[in-house]
Structures are given as C-alpha cells and as structure tokens.
Image (cartoon, rainbow, N blue to C red):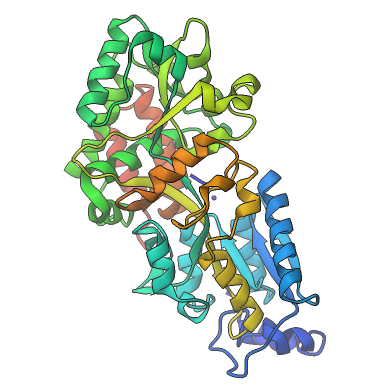
Length: 444
C-alpha cells in the first residue's frame, strides 16, 4: 500500500490571454495536458513536478534534482509541489488546465486512467523504454502499461516480500533462515513448541486499518500463482473467490492464524498497530519471533531508536521463502510520467530519473529510498540491511506491483482492507469475506 469533465480546449483557450508563455512552453493542450503535441517542441526553463512523498526523501529529492539541474544549465529551475492529497489534487489540476510537467504517481491506477484519456506522454517519447526495462526488475513496467504502451517508470521502489527477526534471539535458539515454504512452516511450529508466539503481527493503521493483511495475500498470490495469475487477479479476471486466491489465504491461515501463532491473538489484530507490531521481538525475553513488513520499516520511527541506530547488528531480514522454486517479489514504487509533451528539458529530467543508474544517490543516503535500477551503486545506502534488501530485489525473477494499489479504490482501499480485518479477527469466515470483496468490485 501507498497512502490512495471539463473541456480542456475551452479552459485553455480562456487562459491564453494571461498564460501565453506557459502555452508556448508546453503548458497548453498540445503539451502539458496530454494532447497530441505541437510538433515544434520547447525547452522550459522551469519544470513543475508534483508528488506525494515527504520527509527526508522530499528534502533529498529536491536537493539532488537542484544540484543536477544546475550542472545542466544555470537557467534550469524546478517548481516542486508535494501533496499528501496527490490523487485528488492531480485530477483537479488537470481538469483546471494546470497540470505539472512531470507527476510522480504513488499508485498506478490514476496514472493508467489519465493515460487512457490522453493526458500522459508515452514513455518512448521521453527515453529508451527497452533500456529502462532491462535495467529494472522484470514486470515493473507493467504497472504503467496500458494497451501495450508504457507511460511511466519507477524512480524509487519498495520491497514487501520480507521477513524480519532479532539476530541474537535466533542465534541463541539455534534458528536458521528458511529457504522454502516448507522450512518456514517447520520453523514456526518449532517456535511455538518452544513456548513463544512465532508471529509479530498487527493490522492497525487508523482509517487504513487492514492494509497489512492485504500485503500478505498479495505476496502469496504472487508466490503461488506467478506473474500471470497475479495480474489477472489484480484486474479481477480471476476473482477473490477462486482456487488461486484461496491458496494464498490457506498460507495466511497456516502462518498467522494458527492457534497460538499470532502474538496478541487474532481477535486483537486490528488494535495492534502495524508500525510497532514487530517490536515485541526485541523484548527480553522476546514475545514473538518474526514478522513480515516492507523495507520502509528500516526508517526512523518504526523500530525502537536503540534498534534503529544499530540495525545491522541487531536485525536480520530474509526474502519470503520460495513456494515453488521461483523468487518473485511483491513491491511498489513511485512512477514518474511526463504530462508535458515535446519539451526537451522535461525529457532530460525524465531520462535522468528513470534511466540514469546514478539517480537517487542522495536519496539513498536517507535510508528511506531504494533504487529500482539494477546497476545502482549499493554502497550509497547507509547500512548493510538496505544493501541486503537491494540484493534481494536485484535477484528477483519478477516484481508484482502492490495489488491493492492497482485495484479500484472501492476494493483496494475499501472492501479488501475491511475484509482482512473481518476475516483475521474472526468476524467473518472465508466464504463470506471473499464474496463481499468480489461483490464490491465496480461494474465498470
């Protein structure tokens, strides 16, 4: 999870008198609003960029792009527009005829929707798509592809197919990192027999409560079914109530809902906050022994400060053990796309963000950013934990983009969340849960 008609010609004609310079430099319907393009092209000296990420990454992002821009031309500047309400604001700005030159989408759904309406430049007009495709995890560009055409590419990524543990505790108890699903199941059974709840787990996330459970199901639909099944499920060509998705719930049952496995008990899962759900593994003695979460948890504010400051020595991480010999990863990313067409400077910025292996070196230092580029210099990450995660990503056979982010909002940030809460806490059985989610899928 990432936190989720006006006539353009008429609007823009009304703005010509006051915005002539913008229209000439790609701000009009022929360029920034995603029209057919004016043919002559332009070279804007101020590039507007809109995105959702904040905090340390935002600071590093702006500095990195400013420094790069200054090397290209002293006249090249950037107008940054960070918004926690990105999804609604980007739509509003486009409807008003005031889109940014480049938008960085935290979720692919709205990017694809805008692309189908002709509001986004094809990636092939900005950079070499095949070069980008070969430099990132297979399958990543699927998230920005509509009818065989690619409209965006990742400038950052995160990986979710990860389990975490306390190194000292595991060493003391003689536990070894499992390589297969069978080994993982045997390990959790051993942990329970040793008298400790195996799984650190929580669904709590304020109004978004339930989303951590969706990551579990997404990961195991991908692990058991592979890329094709996963994509069909995300597109609802395969329903929730199907053998393919039930396999993922079966694994969720075994690893999380087996009696005595979840620390705190399944009935309390919704009140256990995801942000700190893994921290009981560091208690003395530990209250649970492993947990599943994305790489964002390495940022300050999740693990206790003492753990965060010594993460390499204290915390271990491993990839979701293989179910069938394959090694796909569930992930997500910020997808950069050009809304201004036929502009040479917009093209340069896009090429830098999505095709340059050096892109992101300043952002990587924050610990809040991972490069999607397989040629990125991993020494730029601030710790070995992130380097290990980057290695996992680079060795992945395929990436499945976060399914709930790509589903219609009524499902991906609605019935799927509530379904995971109801099923996990025992308020609904599996049949009722799957039917409710399927029934909530929009008709069109």
